[in-house]
Length: 190
Image (tube, rainbow, N blue to C red):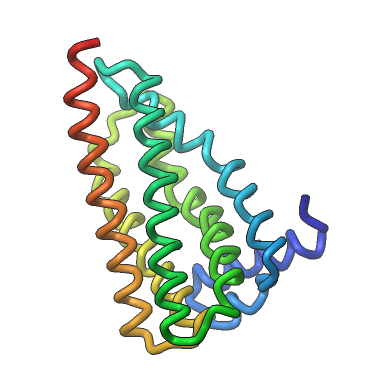
């Protein structure tokens, strides 16, 4: 899995990126094996998110909601990584692509940490209305972190890093709309 040193470096990298410290991205290994192993972090963090999806299913069967959101998650990740790969290839920065994957996957730790109050409110059955603005803030902050990571991993201008973050937002939000329509379409008839 992860060595103790690798785990320490990656978690410090998460903290440094959360504080917008450019050297945080350099803590991540740029090898293909590190990028592949970093998907384990996403898998480890996924149950917290799946629990919220299932809880918020309402009258729609939880299995359908979880399945649709998992499909959304996988599809948006594949589309986004494909776009980033082709952009990195266009700018002759492919050698940094695996570091990018590793950094983005590990940044999920920061995301779960930041969204923990909302997760706790949902799982404890509290009213989440007071947390809605915070949820929007955390969502937007995650895209800012993505732009920051893109900028410093690929060593490109921040405007292009911001553009890539906007692409991530567009892919994610459009696929989320598809999920909502499918959920509305498939849910009532079950």
